[in-house]
Length: 618
Image 1 (tube, rainbow, N blue to C red):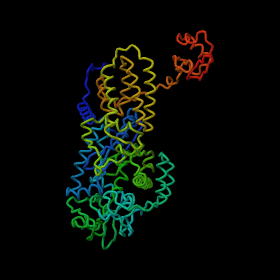
Image 2: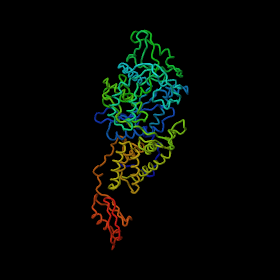
Image 3: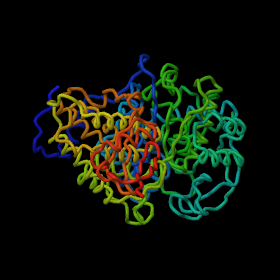
Image 4: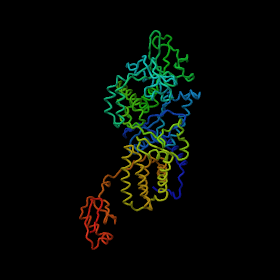
């Protein structure tokens, strides 16, 4: 291995990041398949609604944080499944379409394209071969299939019930979508209105949902509200009187009554040419070619259900689909589900504790009871991300006018600096007050890393200085521990200290730098790849092995003790750990400065083992 001559080399982040993200995705280095020779690790972000505004800066913290974990686990030898999809259906897209007059499918297609490009510029290591979109028939076919499984088990039923009705959206919304009596989406007034609605009988699983929280590796502060929501559980209203959702696969026949659509006839396609202006009646009721059909039992004229399913249904099972996203024959094959199993680490927001996670656990238990999955908990480990807010503590939002344009930030700073700035402020699950000044702060560290690489790193070092070796070994353990705890700020801080310590050396051995590059790679993937390549490697650093800490060398054998005379520092002494007072006095008096100060004087000695020795003169 021979490092390229990098003297006076300027780091052009635009050129570097553009080059590497194209190579990564062009070479499909994050693509993954079943590999029985490796342990599997399945990590997942709660997938986003693709807003027309583009990726929210908060996603750099949340998705960037899980990407650190995914990259680290790959380097630790795991076969990592990390994929992304789009929560495309639902009220946000439909409300935006009503406002603009543009069809929600057109809006979301454009938004998805923008999101994907931004995620790539952030260096998120998704396997894009597994991308899913809830608005595609290949996906919502299986959402409809899930409804039929519920129906067959008596867990899907229809009844009149007073439900939350948004006067502005003109549709039913869930309890979780009502905030202070207002619609979470449009801030309109919510009233109670009796309507015929479809429900899933979550209450039938109430005891199991509560008891099985014992299986969950969640922090108690997140389990408590989750359990509390299961004390007040009532059945899940899954129907909406809106357009942009999966059609409910039920047919009403004058002769046969309520008839489920046969599975072979799925999907029930959502028509595209629809007037979706909200009137209080389902938009699909106005589409004759959709409504009018024949009964699958008797062949007589019949009509389809015109309500659509809530977006919570489409997101309650997507964790299974990522394991087998292109399967036309089943929601996911037993082989894929058997290998990948449950999600090993899931991240989302605190709001998901009392809505999405309840529904996903319920669906998983139903499928488990049917023998369709081999596990009954989908997310044994869940970490909610702390909000990323502005410096005054306000949420970033378009309405407040404080939301930064992520495309502009990418163009100005690049993906690595955005990632580092969002991870450095606080631990992952704490609220982070973030601003552009935080990017400037981590840029000093970033520039130091690059400057050391181009000016000090060399092969021409006979032996690694012992201080660098011991500091680096300790850093490996610190970074590994911090990533496992999702305290990315601690890992970055430790790396900053290490880099600062290298300023005392004229040269840095290349073998030391190789290890450091591996440590920083999960956090700043682009600059790590660039340095790795310039050091002569032809394969990606992200496919290299994570450094292994030498635990034996971590066991400290010597300690630095301060020597004082009358409380004033006169020097330091390296002593064996646990050295006696006699040894400390003897070795201190052998130092020239101390022996001269104490010559011909009487003194007493105060010794704090492994810390300080103080000679007090009379």
